[in-house]
Length: 360
Image (cartoon, rainbow, N blue to C red; front, side, top):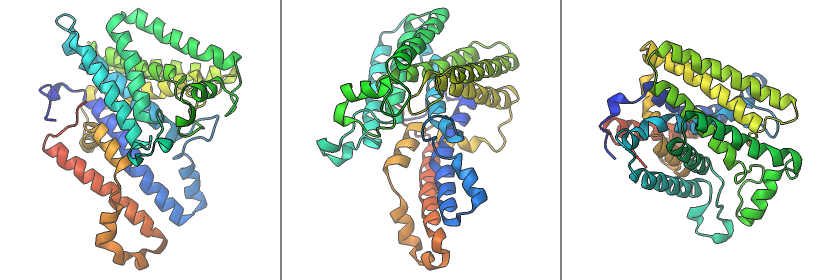
């Protein structure tokens, strides 16, 4: 729970980019949506459209939040695994991997699996971002530990192919006609959550997204020329975006809810571009002015996500400001949302200032 010894060696660009992702998720978007609902202005509604997930095929701005989270988990892996592999292979790493997998999966059931309802009829087994991270992390871990870089790249391509073939040949890309939906129905059954998302078969492409982040992490970890590495990250991103668009035009739609191979490539390309930009500005140019505060989210990502998704601080805001309701009118709910997000931020800020980090 304390500050790790290698804090100063952390990749600042990664912590800040992760913090930006979580700030969008846990502060900016909820507050913006609540203001937009109160204002109901056509020009603002067009902006709000980008801060919600695409209903089926296609890609909006908000659809990058989850892939970026998975990508950055992969980016940190070459750094976190180094102490287990730098001086010979330490088998304790398997315990670390298993422990992290199980804890993330459990947290996922708490956040969206309805575990805290204590009602078996309404518990969902596999239905959350944290569980997608857990599975993607497990897949990527085995690749990083047992394959050389070329083997990792080949295995990642094989995962995409294995995912894509039955998706193309054994169904279509409709909500109830796709192969991944039928796999979920057979394996998870009634313990599925949101039926518009698929999880079990999509685990293969979750692994690919995490591996993309791991490739970016390896590029930065072994970099001798940071500017050249930033350029390589950007070029890789452009190639992946084009590959995703080509796959989309060839009949494999970009669809986040199915986590299709085209979406994996397209979103992975965007993640590479964002990582390149962050790496260039922060680690190459050393510019962090006005950005350091994002580490409050970025260095306690799991804590931030769980607190933000599970605990509602609105009752505290109501207790100290209920007199504002007649004054704020339709915007009172926006005030409650802002207060809820602010309390979460202050808790994370206190943890950050005291060097308290949840490590799993």
